[in-house]
Every structure is written in C-alpha cells, then in structure tokens.
Length: 372
Image (cartoon, rainbow, N blue to C red; front, side):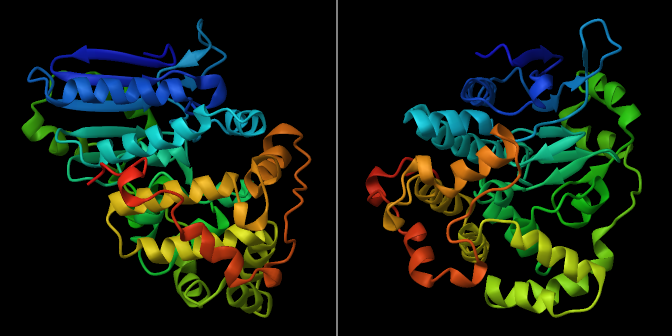
C-alpha cells in the first residue's frame, strides 16, 4: 500500500482518498498499485457494497495543511515520466501497464463506484473517474476543471481517453483530444463525462452519508444533491462539429486559420503550439477508438505509449521523444518553448504516423492481453 492513498471501510462502503495534495494527487506507481489492491480486495468481499473515491485538497488554513476535498487528480506524475525515460527505468513501462489495467478494472467494477470529481480532474484523473461504467457514478462541482491535456506534453489522451472522448457528442472528442481544452462540471455532464453537478459545500455531508446509505438507493440519494450548472461549450458545438470533422489535422488547422472570429483564431493558435506529430497520431487514435471496446482501445494506447517514448521508426529514443521534450518544456525547465520535430503540422507524413499503430508485441504477449 502507498501512504499517498488512504483506505477506509465504513458501514459497508470502501472509501479511498488520494492523499498527495501538494502534487494535486498526481498518480505514482505506488498509488496505482494501492488503488488496484484495494479494489481487488473489495470486489469479492461481501461486507463491502460500494466504493467511493475523492482527492484531498490543499488548505493552508487547516492544521494539517490539507482539506478533505479539493483537486481530485491532475493525472500521471509527468516528472517521474521524464526522469524514468532519461534513466531507462523499466518502472515506466510498469506504470502504464498497471494504470491501464486499473482503468479497465474500474470501468467494469461489479459494485457501485462513486467518484467525487472536485477541482482538477485531468489525464489519469479522468481514467480513475469511472469511465461511465454500468456501476459508476461521477459527481462534479462548479469548481471542477477537467481536461485531457496530453498534447501539451507531446503525448496523447490515454487511460482510455480514445474510448470515452470518441463517444462524446458530435466532434467534441476530436476537439478535446487535440486541443486539451479545459471544461467545467456542467459541460462534463452534457458531454457524458460526468453524471451530475453538486455544490462543493455538500461534498463532506455526502461522503459521510455513504456509510448509512442502502446500495439499492445510492444513486437516488446522491441525485437528490444534483443542481443545474452553467455550460460553456454548447455555444461552440456547431463550429466544433464543422472544423473537427474535417479529414486531417492540416485541414482542420488551415480551415480555422482561414475563418473569421476570435474562437477560430485562438483554437488554431493553440493547435500550432502542440506537437505536430502527436496531433496527427491523436486524431487517428480517437477515430479508431470510436469503433473499439475499452479493452481494445487500452491495448492500442499501450502500443502508442511505447512508441511515444521509443519512436524507433523515426530513429528517436526516449531521450529525444516528443513526450520527453514536451514534459521538459512544461514541467522541468518550464520555458514553455518545446522544440517539436518536425516543427510544422504540414510536414507530417502518413509514414510518420502509421507505425504508431503497429503493436510492438505479438497478440499473445501483449502486456494487456488478458483484458476483455
């Protein structure tokens, strides 16, 4: 178990608190293993009828410097990714294999799984939010800030991102995957990425009540707290469907650059700052995933992450990958000037993209071969 994950049992409910608030509860390998161990132990435990998860927040006013709710999870620990890639640390491979296995476990969990998605919910945080599985309930608040921002670091929206983004209405999936746009709780509900908005002030009482709630009425009891929220994305839906339904990244960006208005100009500028290579990979990822099961999507993403750190077909190792360069610019040196290679969206060819989708493993030896 990890001291960054607090595990409790109260009244037939398994309670999980991500307790790494200074890092916005970014996931370490130890945290992934602790979460997996807890969920597996409760899965067949007749005493446990439901599971709930939250993230501990930062609160300078409290004696411990923490608050019971706050940022849910900012994603995977990208500083670890950077260090492990440069050092050739094999635990980097373990992290992604075990994280994706955890995502699959949560999505198919046989008991109610309630995620309180307050504050920051990004990347890997979306992966442990429940994925909209049959027994999951994803609760957001007006202060939830959600995104799959991986293109900013030269990666792709993983943790099953291809699966859940591709199922958003219209072309919202392509838009969110390519731009990494940050959206709020009400938009998450409209996109099918959350189930209801509640006031942040209600969270402590809801959490405490879980120990007394009958599992059969759990959803109804939580739904009593749901409120209406202010959506922001709906006003741009028609434009998003038009531009992000175009065939290629190049066509999308050039069409945006030729369109009038601040939204089109700002969106094109944001895409120009992303890794050109990975934008092309991401568009292909989302469109393939639209027709895949979660298990098949996770296997594809496991292939993609290997190629992202070891782009052998371009004669690039982890130390020179788009992902390591993107993390360097954003989180290590913090100069926010990544040196992408190639530098222009127009310079990417199909031969650069296609090998990302060829698995480096035979099917029987794939790290996620057992997922169904």
